Image 1 (cartoon, rainbow, N blue to C red):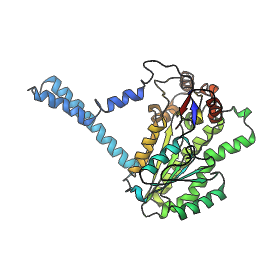
Image 2 (cartoon, helix red, strand yellow):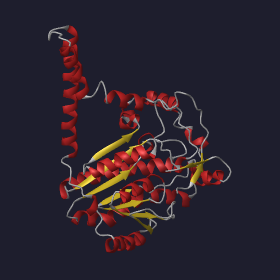
Image 3 (cartoon, helix red, strand yellow):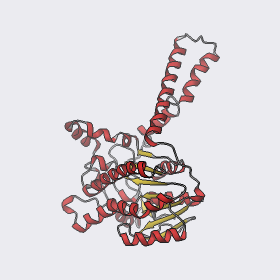
Length: 363
């Protein structure tokens, strides 16, 4: 079973589950869905309404507009991401860094139960001891020699890797003046340099795989907006996003059979950011790891390139940099992005509190 962590303090209310993401999701499956909107004029016609009646004309115009938007979205995705590759889970060997807990463990367990071959790389032991279809390799992803050794063991034991999920991360949550030089080195090495090391180690295997491959990169909205007490983390995540985009451009030319997936989530409900409270649960809800895992798994299963942003604001976060600087300052104050880390406890603090507090399962 996953390690138990205490439940952070919450302001519960009847509308707590309500968020802009939920509203958008409802509209996308109703008034903004091509199939649903065409039912409306058909219903009008079933009531013997004439084609030139105002309600009929309005409903047809709306349905046509939504259909055109849907078609434009399909064309946009095809132009941006190209054709998908064929994926057979029985032939996939999935390597997940930082997969002993949190989001990485969740993805590993899902693929293990579905018949894929999964290798988890982590310096920590797996939280649940073992998982079906998952092989654990103790490995520090910031150590090039350990990575080379483990890569050889994976290819010998499991086969040629076809999917690499760079998920390992660490958060100190300290102001820059409070960070020690070893902490800075460790943060940048784990959150940024390890991506270079794992790519250099596993990319040759993905390139020669007969079924192609997929690379998944975990970034963060903090890499775009930055935040107080996250200077090291923000710098690393910005570098990770730039690395991914540049690598994707290279692979489109040299190895078009390899797909790339960039994941840019907001605050995740994992022990990594335990204690941090979102300032606005409606506009910036905390993202559950299971929701992010669903999107990542869907992208891998479909063999497509993708850019995943969750929650809704994460998909539009790049527009933040377009705003005038004064407006950016106002947005930062309203969002509370620079005060959110004041309640940060982190994984170790959560484990200490968990011995006495109310327990929950952390993904």
